[in-house]
Image 1 (cartoon, helix red, strand yellow):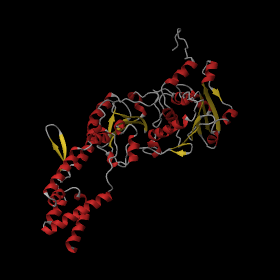
Image 2 (cartoon, helix red, strand yellow; image 1 turned 135 degrees about the horizontal axis):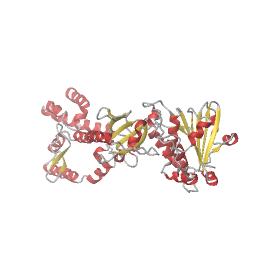
Image 3 (cartoon, one colour; image 1 turned 120 degrees about the vertical axis):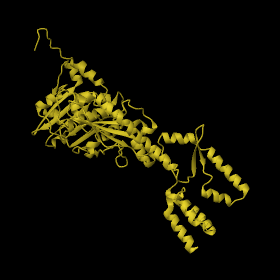
Image 4 (cartoon, one colour; image 1 turned 90 degrees about the vertical axis):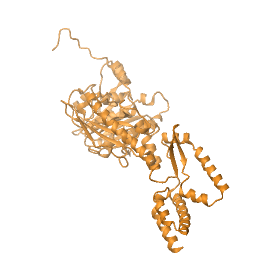
Length: 492
């Protein structure tokens, strides 16, 4: 209904378009937003091109269903689709703003050319042209202008598809006269896309897509380390009363850092370390939105840093998760948050058990260890086990004065452990390197041979062999020790 007092009051194009550039897109989030459109268009191959010299540009080309001339015009309109309209199940869009606001946050000239039914059409938003006309002046590209588009040949060779081209990259270059800055940023973009779209790149629950950058194929980066991680609990499903679509939760506990290679640890922890990347990983239609947060349900600490939780939400619940325009933040609704709080405490305990299990493994009560942990009123201390069989036999073989010197030296080692350095290295996930297995094996077998010779002479070899089964480090080399025993016993 139109009232007599109604006034058509459209926004002033130059001001609104310039102001929406400040929404806060990073270049990697902006390119990811454009790729969302390609996925929604059922693309299976997406190629990203960029050039530094002589004129920097970025182009994203897909082999999706493409758009007709009228569809392209509608697609270039700001707010081309209401967020309240139910989208297709696999649609990654939200407000009908993403491709435009994301692109123009990085460049001043956005060209989109699409091919459908054998016909190619093109449209362009040029911010400088908008300032001149002071209108929402969408440029219709003619054939000559289309043919001059960077990498247009890729689109022409396809039956259908769309290419999005960014020129005049003012915000990407950020005022720098050194256009090579684009090269460094695109390295970060590659890592971002390999994480955000890792399930699409691997075909995990969705039809697989291929993304390349200047001809180099992107490799999916799985943040859950699936080959070595384990699930603390089964998948959990949360239904929202009165709404279609379910929230699915899958918890993971990563392996202890000591079970990762240096490269894996760097890859999965990055510069921030594992501690900062623990938490929920929120996926919308298999596309990663936000990660590395517990939504203030628990605090991040050293004992929970191995816990990560995959949360899948459908686009039908966007409004409940307060999804922003950039699709980079999502906050769970209270009904989901309540259940997550209950689950996260159990899941974080699983991460703690990974650490405590390692401690139990290193200080096994049923095993005679090299070191002992002693609890006192002041705290705990770690002492060398003076009852270790190797040390006992060694003490018997030397005189009293040498025994005293040996024990004094062992106490000196005990009291001068680099606890602060060790604590720092463990908390910063530095890999603690031990001697090679081969060197350790040689040492253990040499000690075992010496002890067996002595035991056989005294007729106590059976008792010694039983002790080996519960004594470090022999417990881990029983097969080799049994062969040594047979060799000494029957061959002398």
